[in-house]
Image (cartoon, rainbow, N blue to C red; front, side, top):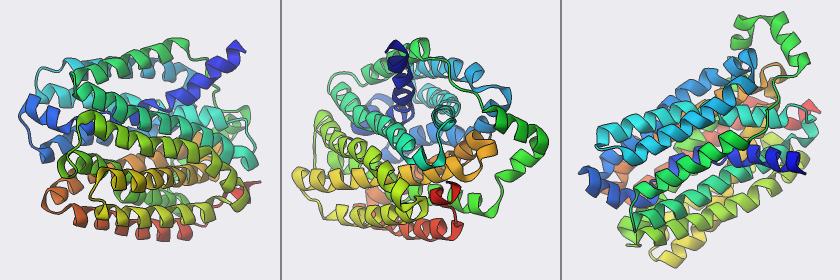
Length: 385
């Protein structure tokens, strides 16, 4: 029982990335005041987290499969906690950005390694369920982040980062040893050689899947940032009110993720991804119509669930696309996802200040490109059974 409890921490560990990314969304006004910066400049705090995260994800999974996931994961979680504490203690905006950069760098060695370890011994026909549970852990971070950030914003925004740091350090101390790459995968890697493993990531199907992740994040699944801004600057909610609104979408996403994993195992990853992206994009296009807190909350609950089904879909496809380099494929795909989030953080905030409607509609429109790339990839979880 104790072993199962400790193993559950691997799923909880999936919450660290979203928690670090989104905890600042309800506290934009307080950060603007503390550091005397504009809304557009606050986009760089997201950028400084997401760019090193995305860049290192290109190599972190493959490095871990070669050096051993168990040697890297625990120190990475501990250093992530230290960087998060540094965000709380940052005396100036430059130091805050530097701490965010360190956060993102460490998270690149957490997210793909956890997911690769969890799916290592699972047959392809059951991958959707595992990825769905892991996505629920990610949704836990997404729903906890706005509540923590919103409540802290009404008292002292720095408390949110200190609490996140404490959680990270506890996970680092208590998590069990993770599984390294299977002997079969290691043998294939030695046969192929390191250059071949890197080249395996550059095949057309994987590049199209990576494009799907990038476009989805730049577009519809990145709309959480816009919703956070709408709740404060358009609707006029308090920090805790905005946190509760974002929390509702996170709860819906957490509930939808494991259920969508079951659907995915029956339909196949490509068809499930196409449906998820289409529904999510349509809901984001409706968000500008929300002119009250209740209407925004209702639409966002459904849209929040839809965003998580998109994530489950492309992560499931990535987890079976190259079994000989599972962590490398996952990290490569996730790299493009968070690159999309990074670009969106500096692209949509200035657009939002001019017209929230244009920002939402453009974000939804990019979902159509993501739909085209996932269909063109030809990948499908059912093909791996």
